Structures are given as C-alpha cells and as structure tokens.
Amino acid sequence: MRIVQSVILFLQDQVLGMQWLKDMFAAFLQAIGVDIQSRLGASLHFFFYDVVKITLLLCLLIFLISYIQSYFPPEKSRSIAARYHGIKANLISALLGTVTPFCSCSSIPLFIGFTSAGLPLGVTFSFLISSPMVDLGSLVLLMSIFGSEIAILYVLLGLLVAILGGAFIEKMHLEQQVEDIISQANCMAIHEVQLSRKDRLQYAKEQVKETFQKVFPYIVVGVAIGAFIHNWIPKEWITSLLGSHNPFGVILATIVGIPMYADIFGTIPIAEALLAKGADLGSVLAFMMAVTTLSLPSLIMLRKALKPKLLGVFIAICTFGIIAVGYFFNILQNFL
Image 1: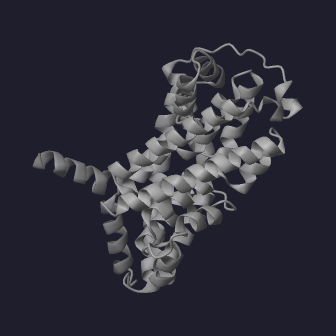
Image 2 (image 1 turned 120 degrees about the vertical axis):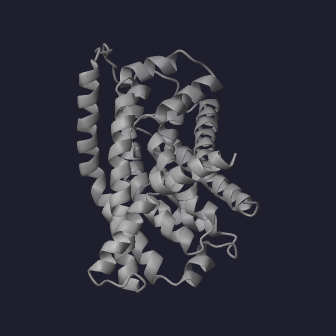
C-alpha cells in the first residue's frame, strides 16, 4: 500500500505537477541573482514555471486527444449519438463532448452541425455543455493542481450537469426556439475517410500547432494574472470575497467568470493562485466553469443559432449547475 501511495505521489508531484521544473527555475533565478522570496522574484518564478509547465502539458494533451479525436469526426459522432434515445443519448453525447475542442467557441460549430442534422435538441445541448467544461485535457491539468480525487469528481459533476441540463431542455420542447437558418439547414452526409496511422499522427501534429497558436496567448495572460494575484493581492482580500466567510462567494466567482474568455489552460493558473490565497475550492471551480462554459464571446456566437428564450434557458441551466457544483465542493472541502 505504501508503494502505491509513493507512486501516486510521484505522479502527482513530479509528472503532473512537474516539481522538478519548479526547482530548476528556482535554481536558475537564484543563480542570476534574483531573490525568489521577494514579490518580484516570486512573480517571475510563478510565471516562468507555470507557462512552461502548462505549455508542455498542453502540447502533450492536444497530441494525444487529437489522435483519439481522429476516430470521432463530426459525422461519426453524430451517428453514434443518433443510435441512442432518452437519458442514454444525453450520456453518450456528453461523453463525446469530452473528446472534442477545448473551448466553447470551438464546440459551437459542431453543436450547430448536430442540430442541423436532426439530433434531438436535448442531446445536442448535453454535448454543448460538456465539451468546454469537462474535456480530457481539463482532467489531467486539474489533477496537476488539485489532485486526482478532486479532478475526477469535477469531471463527473460536469458530466452530470451536461446530462441533466440536456434532458431538461428536451422535456421543455423548445425546438421552435432554434433559429430558422439552423433548423432548416440541409445537412449533407459526409462519408468517413479511413485514415492511416500516419495520417492520424499528422493530424495530431497539426492540431498541436493550430491549438497552440490560438491558446498560448491566453496561457501567458492567465499565468500573468495568476502571478499577480499570488504575489501582489493581499490574502485577506481574496479570503473576504471568495473564502468561507462570504456565503455568496460561489455566486460572485460565477458572475466574475462570465465576461472573461479563456479555455481551461488559461484559467487554471488563475484558479491556482486564488486557491493559494485562501479562496474556497468550490468558488475557484465555479469560476473556472463559468469562464469556460459561459463566456460572453461564446454566448454571442450561440445567439446566432438560438432564439432568446432558448439561449436564456441554456444560461440559466449552466449557471444553476455551476453554482450547485461550487457549493458542493465548498461543503466537501470541510471534510477533506
């Protein structure tokens, strides 16, 4: 048992957390005369370590997930989801969302394609909710910060929000609330192309390059904000706003997260800094969910496909689910 615990701890600290990289940057900065105990030095240490760590994980995860994704092109994903009905269809759709793009703006075109193809509305919404919120990349990155138990529970609860949210929308019979340009679109069948292993590897490499170019600026900005919070914002401020003394901390974190736009890779360093400064776990995770699922740019794009009533229902469901998950983790934190 002790050997298993040692292996898990090694994976957590050295493989996912990259403690060796943190120590290396500390030694480098000290070697060139930077005091890493000072605010400026600690900020530089946080910045360089987190940017490199997240970038390395990003490239590895995108490559692996893109290789898996090559087996699930949009037409194949649609055909898989179409085989099932009821709550099982919502479950399959939510699971398919975990192997698709990393942000809501990327998943919206797939959602529109699924809706145009005639899949039940609730099923497509389960996909739309789960895709940015609980992709496989978020699982590994969350494990590097919060540990495996919290990361797995976060993903399971995110899937639950997606499944129940889609099922609720299905029961409301809001098909008429989809914009005519989407509901009346003709979906052309696309025959799946059989890719060789070399083709799949090439596809994965291209996805790494393309996603890195889009995501890296958000990583830099997110880590810079995280470094500022970690070393320059008084702990008392964060604790008073997002700590246990504020019963509305989860709601505040959700509201603050909505205007922002980032993916999981740019959000995690901010969440890491907030947690280190005394913010409650549930408030931090609610902030992450709000940023990745309900960002204003994605809602503006979604308005092109949905009429105001359905868009409002989607926002209400996601907001309620995010807040519920946040309070659940705050309660759970007391027992950890």
